[in-house]
Length: 148
Image (tube, rainbow, N blue to C red):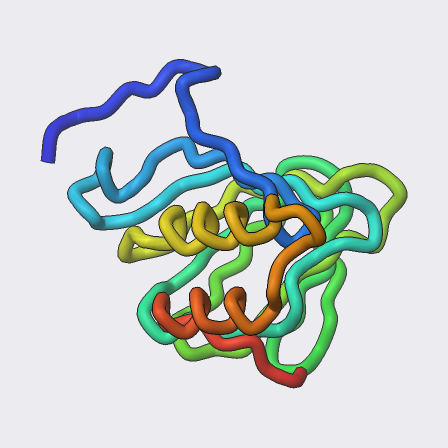
Protein backbone atom coordinates (compact mmCIF):
# COMPACT_ATOMS: atom_id res chain seq x y z
CA UNK A 1 0.00 0.00 0.00
CA UNK A 2 1.02 3.58 -0.55
CA UNK A 3 -0.33 6.67 1.23
CA UNK A 4 -3.41 8.29 -0.31
CA UNK A 5 -4.57 11.88 -0.02
CA UNK A 6 -7.87 12.54 -1.78
CA UNK A 7 -8.97 16.21 -1.85
CA UNK A 8 -12.66 17.15 -1.58
CA UNK A 9 -14.49 16.88 -4.89
CA UNK A 10 -12.28 14.05 -6.15
CA UNK A 11 -14.50 11.36 -4.68
CA UNK A 12 -17.03 9.12 -6.38
CA UNK A 13 -20.59 9.64 -5.20
CA UNK A 14 -23.55 7.32 -5.87
CA UNK A 15 -27.24 7.36 -4.99
CA UNK A 16 -29.16 4.16 -4.24
CA UNK A 17 -31.89 3.13 -1.82
CA UNK A 18 -32.79 6.85 -1.57
CA UNK A 19 -29.42 7.58 0.07
CA UNK A 20 -26.18 9.14 -1.14
CA UNK A 21 -22.75 7.62 -0.52
CA UNK A 22 -19.57 9.58 -1.21
CA UNK A 23 -16.59 7.24 -1.19
CA UNK A 24 -13.63 8.93 0.46
CA UNK A 25 -11.25 5.96 0.42
CA UNK A 26 -11.85 2.74 -1.51
CA UNK A 27 -10.10 -0.58 -1.87
CA UNK A 28 -8.10 1.03 -4.66
CA UNK A 29 -6.60 3.45 -2.10
CA UNK A 30 -6.24 1.00 0.80
CA UNK A 31 -4.96 -2.11 -0.93
CA UNK A 32 -8.35 -3.74 -0.31
CA UNK A 33 -8.13 -3.26 3.46
CA UNK A 34 -11.23 -1.09 3.91
CA UNK A 35 -13.61 1.46 2.44
CA UNK A 36 -14.47 4.81 4.06
CA UNK A 37 -17.49 6.82 2.96
CA UNK A 38 -19.87 9.58 3.97
CA UNK A 39 -23.49 8.44 3.86
CA UNK A 40 -26.48 10.81 3.81
CA UNK A 41 -29.97 9.53 4.59
CA UNK A 42 -33.09 11.67 4.22
CA UNK A 43 -35.62 11.92 7.06
CA UNK A 44 -37.48 8.63 7.35
CA UNK A 45 -34.84 6.80 5.30
CA UNK A 46 -32.40 4.01 5.96
CA UNK A 47 -31.61 0.54 4.66
CA UNK A 48 -33.68 -2.53 5.52
CA UNK A 49 -32.24 -4.89 8.12
CA UNK A 50 -29.33 -6.77 6.60
CA UNK A 51 -26.11 -8.59 7.34
CA UNK A 52 -22.69 -8.58 5.74
CA UNK A 53 -21.09 -12.01 5.59
CA UNK A 54 -17.68 -10.70 4.52
CA UNK A 55 -17.35 -7.23 6.10
CA UNK A 56 -17.26 -5.58 9.48
CA UNK A 57 -18.91 -2.16 9.47
CA UNK A 58 -18.47 0.80 11.78
CA UNK A 59 -20.20 4.16 11.94
CA UNK A 60 -19.79 7.66 13.33
CA UNK A 61 -22.87 9.89 13.49
CA UNK A 62 -21.76 13.27 12.13
CA UNK A 63 -25.04 15.20 11.86
CA UNK A 64 -28.70 14.58 12.63
CA UNK A 65 -30.24 11.77 14.64
CA UNK A 66 -29.85 8.07 13.97
CA UNK A 67 -31.42 4.93 15.28
CA UNK A 68 -29.44 1.69 15.03
CA UNK A 69 -30.95 -1.79 15.00
CA UNK A 70 -28.80 -4.16 17.08
CA UNK A 71 -30.00 -7.55 18.31
CA UNK A 72 -33.57 -6.67 17.28
CA UNK A 73 -33.69 -3.45 19.31
CA UNK A 74 -33.68 0.11 17.90
CA UNK A 75 -31.45 2.51 19.88
CA UNK A 76 -31.17 6.29 19.43
CA UNK A 77 -27.80 7.78 18.56
CA UNK A 78 -26.87 11.46 18.20
CA UNK A 79 -23.82 13.20 16.76
CA UNK A 80 -20.55 11.79 18.02
CA UNK A 81 -21.97 8.32 18.61
CA UNK A 82 -19.87 5.45 17.25
CA UNK A 83 -21.26 2.02 16.41
CA UNK A 84 -19.67 -1.26 15.33
CA UNK A 85 -21.49 -4.07 13.52
CA UNK A 86 -19.35 -7.19 13.08
CA UNK A 87 -19.78 -9.37 10.02
CA UNK A 88 -22.70 -11.73 10.34
CA UNK A 89 -24.73 -9.46 12.65
CA UNK A 90 -28.19 -8.39 11.52
CA UNK A 91 -28.31 -4.61 11.75
CA UNK A 92 -29.68 -1.44 10.21
CA UNK A 93 -29.94 2.28 10.81
CA UNK A 94 -32.56 4.88 10.06
CA UNK A 95 -33.14 8.60 10.24
CA UNK A 96 -36.00 9.36 12.65
CA UNK A 97 -35.37 13.10 12.50
CA UNK A 98 -36.49 15.95 10.27
CA UNK A 99 -33.07 16.82 8.81
CA UNK A 100 -30.66 14.65 6.79
CA UNK A 101 -28.61 12.13 8.76
CA UNK A 102 -24.92 12.19 7.90
CA UNK A 103 -22.73 9.23 8.85
CA UNK A 104 -19.08 8.38 8.35
CA UNK A 105 -18.95 4.64 7.61
CA UNK A 106 -16.08 2.19 7.24
CA UNK A 107 -16.29 -1.38 5.96
CA UNK A 108 -13.47 -3.89 6.11
CA UNK A 109 -12.34 -5.42 3.93
CA UNK A 110 -13.06 -3.11 1.00
CA UNK A 111 -15.65 -3.92 -1.63
CA UNK A 112 -18.78 -2.17 -0.40
CA UNK A 113 -18.05 0.62 -2.89
CA UNK A 114 -18.45 -1.87 -5.75
CA UNK A 115 -21.74 -3.21 -4.35
CA UNK A 116 -23.15 0.29 -3.89
CA UNK A 117 -22.08 1.48 -7.37
CA UNK A 118 -23.79 -1.53 -8.98
CA UNK A 119 -26.96 -0.84 -6.98
CA UNK A 120 -26.82 2.86 -7.94
CA UNK A 121 -26.72 1.86 -11.62
CA UNK A 122 -29.82 -0.27 -11.07
CA UNK A 123 -31.63 2.51 -9.15
CA UNK A 124 -30.79 5.01 -11.93
CA UNK A 125 -32.68 2.99 -14.55
CA UNK A 126 -35.85 4.52 -15.92
CA UNK A 127 -38.75 3.10 -13.92
CA UNK A 128 -36.51 2.31 -10.95
CA UNK A 129 -34.67 -0.84 -9.99
CA UNK A 130 -35.68 -4.42 -10.51
CA UNK A 131 -35.49 -5.61 -6.92
CA UNK A 132 -34.54 -9.13 -7.99
CA UNK A 133 -31.39 -7.62 -9.52
CA UNK A 134 -30.69 -5.72 -6.30
CA UNK A 135 -31.01 -8.96 -4.31
CA UNK A 136 -28.68 -10.71 -6.79
CA UNK A 137 -26.09 -7.90 -6.53
CA UNK A 138 -26.30 -8.11 -2.74
CA UNK A 139 -25.85 -11.90 -2.80
CA UNK A 140 -22.77 -11.49 -5.06
CA UNK A 141 -21.25 -9.31 -2.36
CA UNK A 142 -22.23 -11.41 0.65
CA UNK A 143 -25.01 -9.06 1.77
CA UNK A 144 -28.43 -10.40 2.68
CA UNK A 145 -31.57 -8.42 3.48
CA UNK A 146 -33.38 -10.11 6.35
CA UNK A 147 -36.43 -9.73 8.55
CA UNK A 148 -35.59 -7.99 11.83
